[in-house]
Image (cartoon, rainbow, N blue to C red; front, side, top):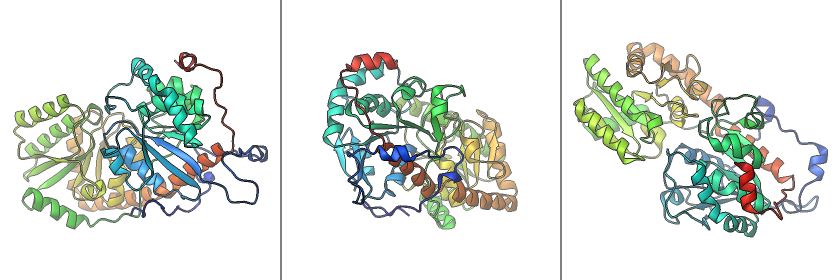
Length: 442
């Protein structure tokens, strides 16, 4: 369960040797170059390292859940968490209530839309607030800027450099992102990726060589009464006792394939002799996709079979209420819902695409061909056809999730990066005009 904020209990210290993707390389000479900005004199307590987390837009997603799982575990005596939002009363600010939150000194007029391409022109538009953000970071004595999404990378990476702060670029998107390939290798002091899939496709690229994989954090101690949650959902939707509940969790964006989920439910309904209901937990980011969903539901006569449930938290409770989690997403870096389903004991049927195969190892779920509603439906039939085999699969998945995705492991790796970055002086780009740095980065 989540710890009391704003002073979370730090997890146990783990050695990086347990994680073959990265090994800290601190040397004695590095330690001797500690900056007075981050530490006090020897033998006296070290001041907390100020870590700034800029957050773009107002759409909540898995990255925000992961980030909350991190900062809830940071020791406030060692790290000062400073969150930057574009709105003081928005959804993002409310999600992180209890932590120190300030407004973006150069907030855009229009919030960043998740799922939309962030090209060179949009990147150039972020430069108007470069000086204000750099000044903000200096005034708040920020040691490390930890960015977690495309717009935050673009709007805060150069500001961090001009303020003399260190930049941790946390990549949670696809491997073809322009920022990861072109900007991150030039400005980031460290690059972290949520999966191997998210690394640049060209193994020899600078970004791929510099990046390390750190899986997102999960509270693997969570326990949910699946029977009780299932009964609660059945009662809320007034479903018959023999109904099969298939769950979809995530934003309704093209990459997550909400239309493919609807097609899968339609196939199951025509195949099975029992009622089939698809529950879709999430929200539409773009009106055109929402309209397409409603058209598909109407065209296939699924008005009573597809239920739009909206965004609900905590998500793992509602994942536990489903008979099977269906993940049709394509090129997903590492979907949180797959791991949450493993933790709470819900069987998973997912497309073999993106980082899904890194979460669902053989024997832990059912992976099927991508972009194939028939394959997804057959996967669901496999899950319900043999309850005993499914129960064994679920038990293996729970054990594996606790081993690979524990929140404490994530926190140990990230804080090791913080500590190493704080030991090295960051040199601001004195005498270099912002536009010159931008031209060099593009």
